[in-house]
Image (tube, rainbow over all chains, first blue to last red):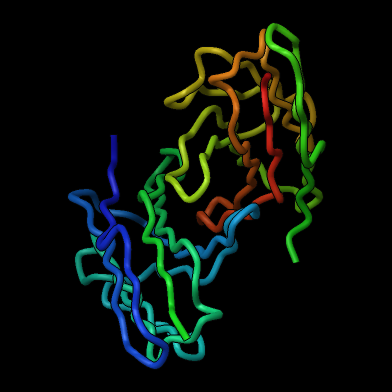
Length: 110
Length: 111
């Protein structure tokens, strides 16, 4: 079974601070996604990375896929209260079902 | 905006009842999934399907069944609901490249 380990599990920061969330695995993934989930709703796709070393930016969010396609990171610059939520990474490889990490619960305090 | 719909949104039901949670998508995706999630916690894969007449069990499948008779429809059935089934159930469909789109979920309470 492929596993995705996310860290940290919980993160509470002040508005304006920067943060990085990590997603690591011993398995190689053909693509990796990041999702954000708010309470009572389903996860919403933020980005997909497919190429080793790839970097994608979405406003204040920067996503990176490791060179070996086994890990990824999400960096948020100048966090805002609206960034609060559960951040999930997920990966797919071959014909295996989509694998999710356990998530990072982010709280940004004004 | 994702075109995937789950009904009902909320359900309170007595122990021992049989229930079916509905999930439909209009994106033509072959892959569909059911996950169980307690508030703020990780997603647990219950069942998945890679196309019509294809269903596979996930980690938490022993007390539920699914069917995939049409591409767009992937219902989940609990034959005999128990309080331990109280949770949020999320349905998703995905492209073969992996990007998944989720419904809003069904919040199930078994009393």
